[in-house]
Structure formats: C-alpha cells, structure tokens
Length: 165
Image 1: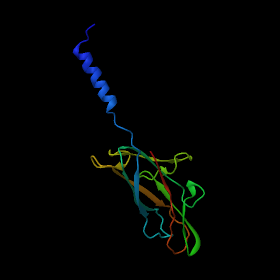
Image 2 (image 1 turned 60 degrees about the vertical axis):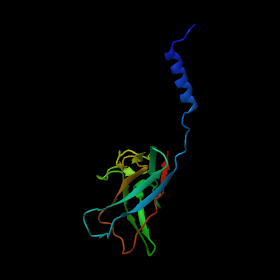
Image 3 (image 1 turned 135 degrees about the vertical axis):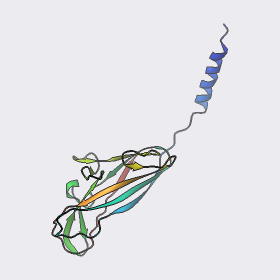
C-alpha cells in the first residue's frame, strides 16, 4: 500500500513538533513597591485623604500573576490601621484596587476583598505592561477616612504582598 506524500509530510511534521516541543519553565518575578503616599492628615478636615502607590512585577515569562495584599497590622481587612511609635493612636485607612476606591484589595478569600490579576506582557485589569515587556505595573489606591481624632506623628503600616502564578 503506497501512502501519499502529504501523509508522510504530516507524519514528519508531527515527529518534529514532539521532538522540538518547548520545555516548561518556572515563572519567577521580582517585586518592587512604592509606598502609598497620603501626605499630611488633618483630623479636622471633613473630606477623606487619598493617596496612591504601586507594585511593579518584573517576571521571567509571559503569563498571569495574581497579586494579593494582607491586612497589615490589623486583625481584619475592614480594620486596617496605621500606628505611630510615639503614641497609642491608630489611624484607620484602606487599600483599593480601583480609582473609585470601592473594591478593597485583599486576599480575595475574605468577604468584600478582591485580588488583582496582572497578565505579564499585556496591559489589562489596571496593570500596565509595555509591548513585549516582562514587566507589569499596578497602582494601589489608598484612602484615610475623615474626622479621625489622632495625635501628631508619623503613621505607618506594613502590608505583605503575595503573588501566585
């Protein structure tokens, strides 16, 4: 039985494909953050104080990276707070995924929180990535609610960031 040339050609291409299939590579990322900068808080101001920061992901491969934030030094996401070493006051604040400051950036598993997916190499979901770049940058939106009776001082909190591939 004689096989047509096209059959042999397809068979050869299939062998070549399986023989030269790319190997899987583990994703690695370097994370660089810019702290959310609120400026000076006035306890008597009637409006909230907003600020922004960012997270930058430099990764080894294209693909999706999920970014989650913990609740900082608080016991829950609704109670995020900053402290000052010079006094007992706590300054409440929140971190958000959107400019409207309506979606709390958290772990996605806790009620009323969400995470962010960055597609390395593609600008989407608020992540900015230049063409053919293995870098994605995402803004973090912060807000301190108005009329909190706190003393003078430098307030801060440490929030841990977790990425999942």
